[in-house]
Image 1 (spheres, rainbow over the protein chains, first blue to last red):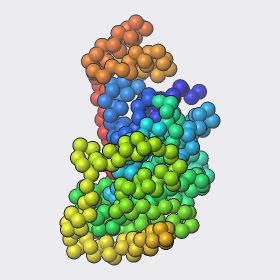
Image 2: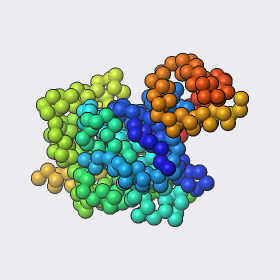
Image 3: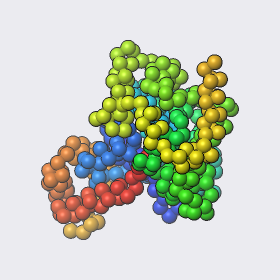
Length: 326
Length: 70
């Protein structure tokens, strides 16, 4: 029988004897305000109770939870290329207590990558798991929540067709910027996907046999290329809105609220503006457009890699953006 | 004084919302352990502070290993 999971959220998907199991942590009414869900978990785990007491259930138990309490239907999804302002978007939305913003939750990634662990897992199974998992996050815990927004990992852009099958009516955006600036950021502090082997290469569109052989710079450019390519392929067919970095933060209240049908008062917008003034990943610092700094820091080698692997897809996205904005 | 006692008590707490409420809000580690020992003793569980410290440290390490940088 399913335990009482009111106030509990799934924090980890773990495979035990080939069975997917979920660890749950108690969050109570706690609003998810940290830049990434992992950081919210870090905060929750400062409480000794949360370290010692975790429910563990089979992943399949989400079906029962979903039947009992399906959660809010998602209002919008955020896809992105990483290091492009998407965390700023998530943080501004999370500034409003009526929004549940789930940012790059590992359990959602685990569901999307489940078929790499067990090839017998069908798309249909992953679609069901994804709906249930998103629903588990969408259960209001404080009572004032009205919207659920999911910010996916950057590589989930490649899973857009499956995610659309799971949620055909949920509006989505794709945040992106000049790839050279993204590559500079990853050069300074590589993200998970930029370290070979930390994300299953198949999820990144790469051949597992080659990832440890190619030069680091090429690996990073190709990971990024896979994401830009996927967006440029899927946007015409699946209908997402493009949000370039240079339109932030204004696009959050000028475009996104409409797109996701989030009603916001003038005070709400002001609250989001305040949140957007902070550096999204380092909230003690002020947000500043760092395009110039990153362009200056780009080496010729990095530019060559960007031009060779990513820029053609970026230019296609730019053309699509111009089409979308008349 | 086996680890089984702690595991059994953890299971009991996980299915008892009232006990959970008594423990959740304690932020101080030492106070938490003392309260846990007391609640356990009241229910016949022989727990030790050392056992609980070890379990807390193991849980911390397990999460740190699975955590990712994005």
